[in-house]
Image (cartoon, rainbow, N blue to C red; front, side, top):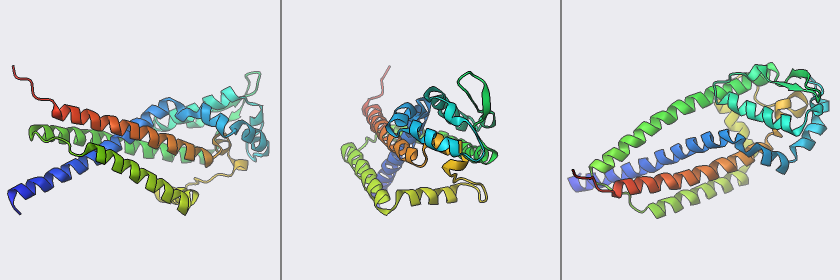
Length: 249
């Protein structure tokens, strides 16, 4: 292979890798940001009428009682506590409790099987977080390599449009095939065999509180939309950095 052709192929590969790493970083930043905002749960709570779901199914729970006595503010706090716990290696999952209107503790929120499942989620997030830190280092190294070679990003507008179109195609394909079936299949692949991850409303206050799986569609939409915004900003910043000349002293 001629040197010029090899250099061109290497540059194309490098830019493709940079785009891929940038999008992963964007997903990571979106997850961190939305976690801090509890994934917009107050808005989702009202949009999905989760309060009504709790009133309907909480009295039917086979293991926990009187969750229907809790109010909206407590529901928002409990969800926020779950998000905090799964982002901090599962700390505090077994200690979550709910109260009656007088402030007396009624019971713990989660059964052992639910704690185990959320611990599995927390473990997965820990691994993904570590992987994301490595992605950051690789992306930084790639940016430095581009800068040293005085290589600029090419066709950024087309790249952004291509990623946007790809996301739309994937979303349509998932909906057309069966989003719920794909969601369940991913659970069987990701989580340890023998660990329960599917919970009926009548056996899980966690599922009732989240109105699962409906809530995950809303969270996925928020996550991808936020990530795309970060992705555009990251590519814009990289382009500006690469176009900036070194300052000579």
